[in-house]
Image 1 (cartoon, rainbow over the protein chains, first blue to last red):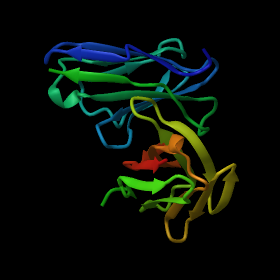
Image 2 (spheres, chains in turn blue, purple):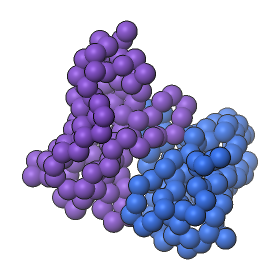
Image 3 (cartoon, each protein chain N blue to C red):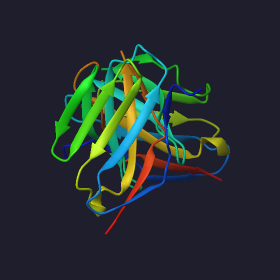
Image 4 (cartoon, rainbow over the protein chains, first blue to last red):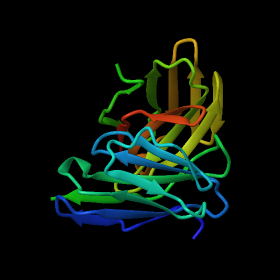
Length: 113
Length: 109
């Protein structure tokens, strides 16, 4: 497909479990963003990659959140020791150039019980 | 005060109406302004992307930016039931993207 894909689409985790969320950006897109979207809210910035370099991680809410993009393509957002407040939709977006238009994936809905 | 404010709605209009959606912001460094449409359980879809002040039209959609007032608008003409969704404004300063909370729109047939 030509768009941004994310997996899994839905994830239920027990409190304290680790989770890994995957993002496949549009082929050739150099910029990749992760956002967290709570119910009824707009997306909140988490972190940004330019190729494999993580240039901004100021939005990550705690050191339990970690993101990587080792080969400058697929990215993984990992959340350790999940808490109930981590329940949200996690959106990935990619862009063909720095500062260009962002194209979003469908998101992963994480529910922590 | 949040960086970007947007009336959450819900906003209900009859089919064929002109819809006006608005956002205000506080950061004068924002230079790029976007409108996204988000259907339930889907990711946001880019509708309009504008730079600085002025108008931009694309089909039934018109985006307006007034940087002096820190106010942006999206107008939808001849609204259709398929336009029912949440509309998010977003703004950018460098790589700093900030989204509004979204306005839920329902277009009633």
